[in-house]
Length: 113
Image (cartoon, rainbow, N blue to C red; front, side, top):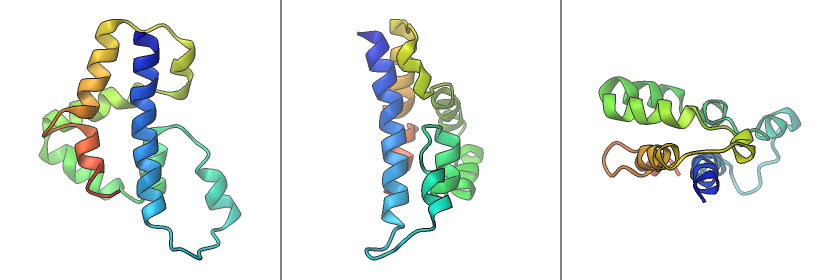
């Protein structure tokens, strides 16, 4: 169960970042093919760039060291984690980094989605 919990927790960050990207897309936009192809990634850092949130992320990590630690924990996740074994401690650590009320990654992302 911890393997799946770890994978799905990271995937929730991916989905939230893609929601931030979608929010910036206008109803009748016809985006450039290269832009769209660049969205076919699972990497949180690359999705931050695609969402144009680099400055916001940088400012927030400088201002909140607990958030910075949580963001670094999220960056350890990747789509290949679904094929790896994860301990209870790893799953709980990632979930905590994402869901922590005041310093969690999802709390920060909700500002932009």
